[in-house]
Amino acid sequence: MEKNCKMKSGFVIVAILIASFVSANAALAYDPNVFPGKGSREAWNRSGLVFNEGNDLGRAGKYDASIKKIEEAIKIYPYCDGYFVSLGVSYKKRRQSGDLIKAEAAFRKAVELEPKDWRNWKALTNGLLAAEKFKEAREAGAKALECNPPAQEAAVMRSSLAEIDKYMLTHK
Image (cartoon, rainbow, N blue to C red):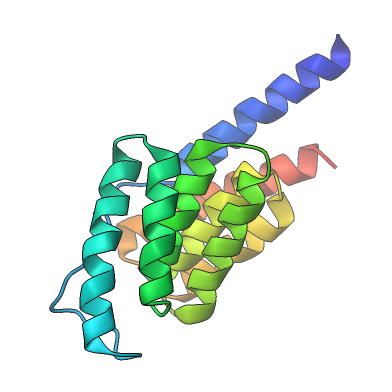
């Protein structure tokens, strides 16, 4: 019984940390006016329509279909960090066996493509928190702050990082 209580309290703290690190963001969507500058514009335009369909499916809770469409968009245009963030979110929300590993890999690819974008580091932080990888999540969250997010986001992140620190101190 004691072990079960510890697991439940660990789950609750993970949920609180994720909720505190997640704040309102505009939904990702393909914008034909914002070409990332890599690959061909034609591939970017083709992939964007597929991506938007996949992203809409994810928002509707249809994660299997969302993952399939976003992966299709990535095959067409593999240079958009936002595609990988959305793929990671769909995996994280679907929660089938192995999905947190796939989500983390997608978030890491987003960071690799755009390492100066705080939103990619924040997505990775959330994925790592979901996988209960607190030390790595703490490091990714600190990287997000180094990328100069807007003041309100930074304040939420600093508070969340302090909570992660407290949790790690009491759960060694």
